[in-house]
Amino acid sequence: MAQPLEEWLDGEVAELSKLEVGELSNTFFFRDPLRPHYIDYNHFYSPADGVILYQNVVKPDEQVVEIKGVNYTLKDVLGDKKYDKPSLVIGIFMSFYDVHINRIPYSGILKYKSLEPIQSTNRPMLATEKDILNMAINPNNLEYLKYNERMLNTIYSPQLDYTYHLVQIADEDVNVIAPFINHQNAPVSQNERFSLIRWGSQVELVLPLDERYDFTTLLDNEFHVNAGLDKLVHINFKNDPFQQHPQSRSNL
Image (cartoon, rainbow, N blue to C red; front, side):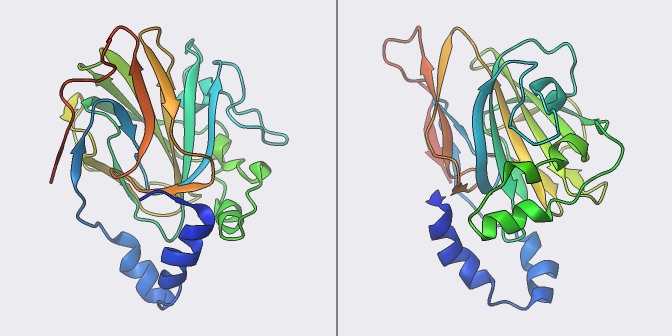
């Protein structure tokens, strides 16, 4: 479950660090643990195991995060110069010690496409990995956001009549984002496994603001979260006096 960064480092990371590097990188890195399959339509769940770097509401032309010398706007995130919706953007960094299976935050219909790099050369993400392990995250090391291979996943939710986005960002090696679903407009269930990123990586959850809903983030930055287990955002249904979607449940 979600933990402050220091607790995660002192617990899970400390235990994994006892493994030989070969065992960790060749076997344990590709683990895919069995997890409960929660259905809760009042929340968006975490799409990735990792550390929350930022949670910002930004306009389309505003920077998602301040990076020295790099202008990285919401339009850049989505690869869409016509995008016009202020959005909540949550960035989650997946370290060497994390499970690298990504999951669906909220049920819907999935389509995806690779985005052309904003710049021509992928950048390593190792500096941010070191920042996390040293508990000293430096936003200026996030320049890879502007350069690296990305996959845009767009999910339309019939329950909400609402569209949101997941952007997967890979390390400097290319062709490391591996979708599990090989066709477009596929129905996907909340917390279903949908993709793997093989090496160091990041996932951004983009929630366009909508007059029908209020979105409340539930965790602070620099918390470690687990895909499919930890709730990131509560949905306040403005027109629902009971403030709850009727179809929420939990299944194994």
